[in-house]
Length: 266
Image 1: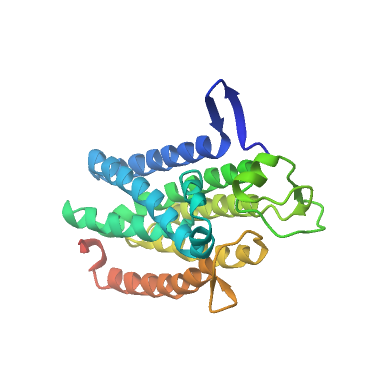
Image 2: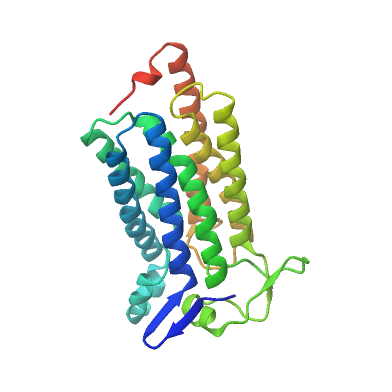
């Protein structure tokens, strides 16, 4: 589509970078507003959000390096492209969760209530970020004859991320953007009906996203790494997260019934 929005002398403004920044800022603002509403320290939530953003960037690029290790080891001159790529979302998620748990423990924040504050912000951030993927041409889909297929023609997309040109492709970036917006509305719907226990919003988000990501992966056409010769790396992670999220929802629900859920901190 439009990987580069404009060029002014030595200054280039790339669509992916712009929308990635917007995604992080919007998601962070949503988390701060929700945290303040629930009595969480706004400064702590803001600092936690910044730590999550930085760790997510590092984790996403590290997992991309791992899944494409053969490519980068054979073409070490391509390592610099990691600075321009978004990376693999699940790599960012895993590292962000690890850093978040450390921070929450360090400053004695309520674990699941803090996670609930961030979940909708992550969803809306993903929706915006995937629009950046769409404009940049990354995370592209497989060829399709469906009427809503998207054809990329910008040679910059091909040189940056290997986007196939002049071929109708599944708009997997838009699929995920729409799905995450639906997840956002689902989370808010359940909260309005009554958030009966802390952690429900966060683990519903994990359940819905990992389930949808598993199926979207079947339509992805970009190289993403293979696990067990038939699943992509993201499908493998999704397959682990679905039962984990269901288990956690059951455990936290039972904890609510016994009066323990709200007291959980780390």
